[in-house]
Length: 398
Image (tube, rainbow, N blue to C red; front, top):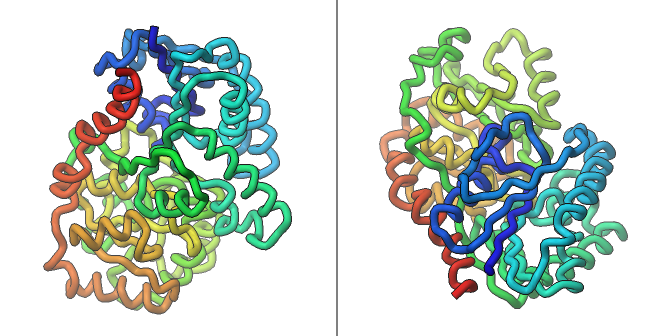
């Protein structure tokens, strides 16, 4: 009897974007009837309800320790504890007819699965959202020339090599993994969003915009994780240099770099051009995404091939043009250029980014921008990309 086991730290759309994608993947698996038995192993969450995903899917949940994601020490120890709990659930369920599907988080779970893969005959399908340990360098956690980085890089090259099939969410990510001499199958399946779940709204109808009295301003918005690899320092430096009086910047989300934004707001009160709002519940996602004229999507210098910001696709669903601040060859930057849905700044120079923002505010660059929602519906349709994901498993089941 064919069996699929999905293991993930998050599995609900209410949790975060990772949970959103896994929720959709598992739903598609169940609807496609690609296996006799589908189960999900994940930490328990009070938001789970009976038949939360699909009544064909068996939820195998466990109580997991909570930890502070913005504290490196707390996060490492919490994920080690969590990985042990995953192991207790996984160990008796791996057989020759088992397809284990996982992501790259939590990190130590990936190491555990690679070790189990040596000992057991199951097949492992790895969905890569982050490339470790390379992503620790632009995050400022490790230096590329350090001994620890070299040890981790060697170790994780071996970890990735154990996967039978790797699915990546960007063409640049495929290039990075190919450089690791990974010899097995790599398939590129971009992120997606069910555009029907995101309401099309006018910016000036937003309660958030009305509270800020920004109806007549040109509002640039950063929505989602405000973390170490988003290049927030660089963005704030550029904001300081913006001259156009109508340019306003709204940050919505949480993360380790939130204090950088709050510090700017505190020290530049007279300018009154930046506002910050805490993370919004998923029920208010359409409200948040519509509270701008232009969506900002960023990656820190050095993040080529190491991550693809899912916020870009959510903003496209809200039909907002994208200002991509990142290497011009990253997945999102290529998408923006190919489909003409916004602008790309890859200069890594705050003064040039500030000038681009001024030009956008002056309306000089808006006339050639294509509807991002139309592009999302045509090229990044949820049904098509989920079917591509499921087909990888289906072909191995035949």
